[in-house]
Length: 249
Image (tube, rainbow, N blue to C red; front, side):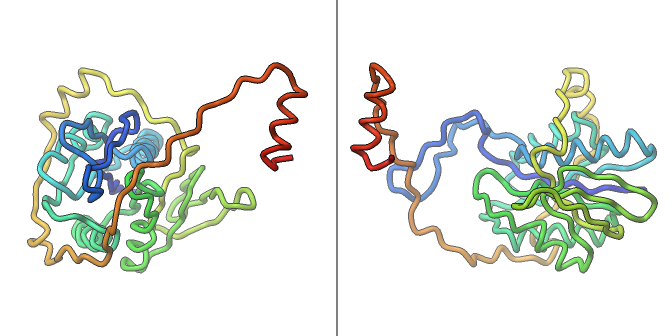
C-alpha cells in the first residue's frame, strides 16, 4: 500500500446548537463554528493508524467547498495527513457531485484505498461513499467498525441491523467509517504549526470538468419540536397511574 485518500467535509461543529433561518430556507451559518465531520475524522484516524503500522504510506486529505474549508484541511494536516487538496466552489454540493469530484481526484492520485465517514452530520445523506465506489467501479465496505489489511485485500467488520458482518474486499476499494472504528487523536499545538507548512493545493470544480448539479430541492427547514415539560411524581404508584392515563401502559 502506497497511498490513501481521505475525503472530509466541513460541517457545523457537533457541539454547536443549530439554528434555523427565520424564513426556513436553511441553517444559519454566519459566525458558527465549523469543524471536520466527526465520521470523516474517524476515517482519517484509521488511515493514520494504517500508516503507522505499514509505514511509507502517503495520506492525502481532500475536500469540496468554499475557501474557508482550508481550515478543516489544515486540521487534517495537523492530525498527520501529508498533503491536502481543496476543490473550491461556492455551490451547494450534493452527494453525486461530491462523488464525481472525488472520482476525478482518485483517477489522478491512484490511491490504494479511499476513506470516508459513513455519513455527514449535516444532511445524513449516507450516499457519497457508495456512489463513489460505483463510479470508480471498485469494491466498497460501508459502516466499518474494524479494518485489517493483508497484502492486496482488506477484511472489514461492518455494523448491520442484525449485528456484525465480516467481508473481504480487494484493493483498491472504498471504505466508510462507523463510530466504533476508533477514537481520533488529539491535535497538539506543534502539529498545528507544522501543518501550516504542508502542501495544500486548491483546484476549481470547473477544472475537473464537473458541474454542480441540483438534483435535490429543500422545500423547508424546521427546528425539532420543543420537548414537553417534565412532571415530578411522588412515588411509583403515581407514575404508573399517569402512564396508564396517557395510554402508555
